[in-house]
Length: 117
Image (tube, rainbow, N blue to C red; front, side, top):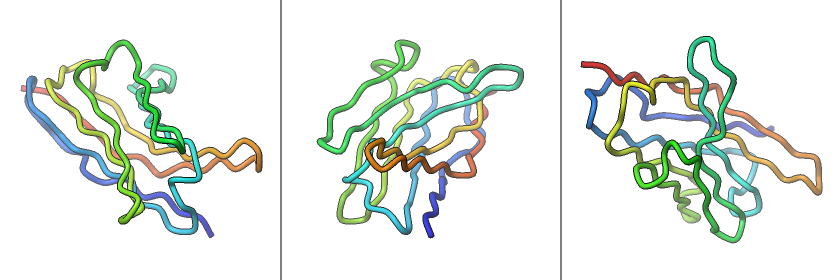
């Protein structure tokens, strides 16, 4: 059974940093495209960052230059380093692993990030 578990969320002041981690059981991240999404209250879920099975990355314009997605194959984790946080980054952040060829699509339960003074 596949399980994705996010951690690392919390309350941080504007300009601060947080590092989110997503740990997987039942799948190997290096075989999947892994995404970080976020959803703020009253808004649609937004794709924030992507890392492909080959290690390529892509970011939403709103976080480019501030967020970095990475993968640790030895630990089978995917992380999102978030710097220079802004109040508008406040949201629940979700880890998502996709393998389209096999129609696999798994989600974590989410972790709350709140940026406020």
